[in-house]
Length: 285
Ligand SMILES: [Zn+2]
Ligand SMILES: [Zn+2]
Image (cartoon, rainbow, N blue to C red; front, side):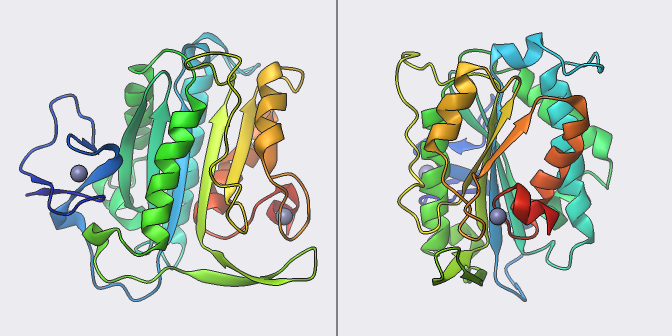
């Protein structure tokens, strides 16, 4: 079996790097190594992509979401695993791609595959899938590098939209027509980036602003979740760079401040990858 780089398909490796990282040793974060034998190239439909940016910083392991005694990292890993497995029932499981990147001081790609392949690989065992996230994320503890995570996601999304992810071979991107709040007719790719954090960007400095590389896209496909109190400084900083939903003109922002809201988060993982939506109002439709 060979591993092929999504950024430069001439980068082919027989094995993955020893540390389990699936980023290309030559391209770094720009390239993700995809197993050649898992690629199903006879797509019947256009493809969608969801990039999940998961906070693996130290604080995620130090705090819980009462009344649960589990730490935030564990709880969200379980929620994400469930949210992704909820998608197995959808008709486009083979055409829905998920990329998961963990970020702390550094950024690492943990997964890039279709919902169908992920489900097959874990034989539908959601606990095993959640354990994978927990193990990988808890190895990364450190600071919170939101900008590097956003940039890595942006490179992948651009490649995907330009149909340049050559490891996937001839594919088309799924688009939906949308009538916007400003009464404009736009085409929206079935591509979303979902970032959650419980802190604030602090690499190299805590005073550095978050730069949203998706803000120039029309529409901006970035959605953000803050884990913790709305009064936290990091919450304001995240909100400030997020756009409003093109349909409802409501912030593409979600707050996870109470245990009950894990259900919302599970639906959000589902929405970001399966259907199309941007805000809480989209979620209620
Ligand atoms: Zn490469
Ligand atoms: Zn909306």
